[in-house]
Every structure is written in structure tokens, then in C-alpha cells.
Length: 170
Image (cartoon, rainbow, N blue to C red; front, side, top):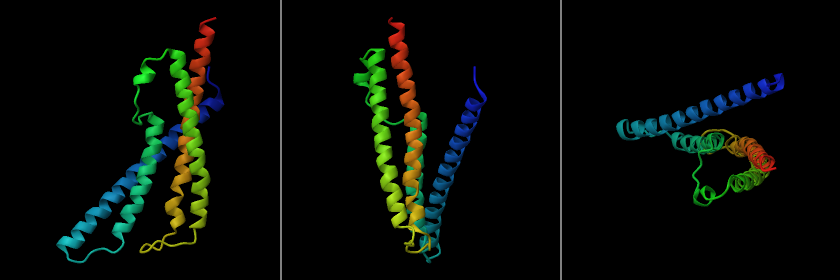
């Protein structure tokens, strides 16, 4: 039986996933457009754009971090599962719990240091865009928070599998 709060959390999770997906598409499209425009202006019009390379680079950074969030949500990161495949269900659940804990710890470090670097660079402008470097760096803690959220969900699933399997053995 689902409660109203479960429905709200599910709806907010879907909305956040759609927002991340849309932002990833937008950053990739923007990056592609910047590079394409730079090629056209440099080689066909003989008048290169001074800002497109820098914008494409920052969009690539954002796209990469958004891709990390999407991969965490879909559990599609590369992994070597030779050892995990040979484990019993309890062992697999325990290994998944350790992996989730490591992801949470790593995300915590990125949140901490990402907030610090974004704050330190908020008053520094980019070279050609007149944009705050803090905007460039803010994706680091934002993506790390999102990944931590997915890792907590993975840890919860692993705990349920671990304790559910133990209760089944009684």
C-alpha cells in the first residue's frame, strides 16, 4: 500500500530525473552547436568566434557531471562483476552495500569541496563569457548530491535484500 507521501516522493523523483535528462540534452546540444559554429566561422567565414571554445568546454564539464548522475540513477556505470556473480545473495547484497557506502563517501567529499571551490570562484569571471566561474563549478556539489541520493536508495535496496534474505533463512 502506498501512502500520499510515497506518491509525492515518486513524483518529485521523476520530475528531478526529467530535469536532469533535459539539462544533459541541452548542455550536449549547446556544446555541439558551439563546436559546429566555431568550425563554420573559423574555416568557412574566416572569422573565428572568441567565446565558443570556452563555452563548449564549460558545457562539456556540465554534461559530464549530468551524465554521472544519469548513470548513477540507471545503475549503468562500468563494473567488473566476476566476484559478485560468484557470491551468494547475502554476499552480493553486502557488496552492494559497501559500494553504496563508498559512493556516498565520495559524493560527500565532492559536495564539501565543490561548495568551497564554487564559493571561492563566485566573484571570478570567465575569460571571454563574463560569466561567474562559480556557475561553472556549482555542478560539482549539485551532481554529487544527486549521486548521493541514488546511492542512499541503492544502500536501502541492499539492506532490504540483506535482511530479507536473513529473515528467509530463519
